[in-house]
Length: 320
Image (cartoon, rainbow, N blue to C red):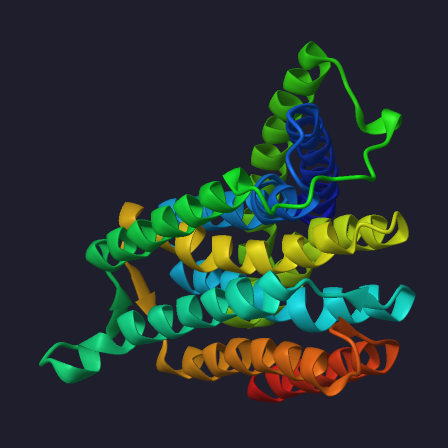
């Protein structure tokens, strides 16, 4: 039964994130907030909720490997799998602010997590960990990022959304109901996924890190995939790319920060290779933007992203 609940948990995570984003986006659109800001905040927060719920429950259960593997795996999947698949479907133009500001912020957040996780190498202690103090530092910088987004949303040069569809306009009451129902579905789905992942790891003798980096990471990244593809189909590339980049920043600063603040997360040194992969995928994203004649992710680069992700999965299987 726990495996059935594991699958149902993913379905609840996806649907919960979907209706949560729809409700929150409807409220934001009524206030004339731009697509980019919606993508970097409301949509990113909503599509990161599966990772947040899974990580919080894993932290409370003491499954630190699953918590860290889920975040790192999700960030890798967000760039290589989701942006790759979305670009194959529809080439993605990139706004200047994304590759000059948001992507570098995502890279800096990755370096920060890597430094904090490995800081104990320079002192006489056994084992690596993301401590409660580290969590507080990550949350502090998350607050700075949200302040930056607030300033951007208030600036005069923010392009207001021109693709608001009547179908996306819900009543205020319905929007709130969507947010509440989505949050409830996320919690229940997250609990079932964590329990199922733990049982699968025990049954097949796999590490929680491997399960977190693969099955759970891909599963909790599905909301980002659905959201980005739908946004690209509607011509809202700013929301599609902003969703992924914003989600990665949320995962590193907000989710890992909150998880380690609740309970320190022991860090396996082998996970440094996954941090390097997060850095490499973000770097590849910058390269994809630079090599083209226009600032966009082409179909060819989308295919390279997906091929790189398949190679990474093969490495994980070989690593065990």
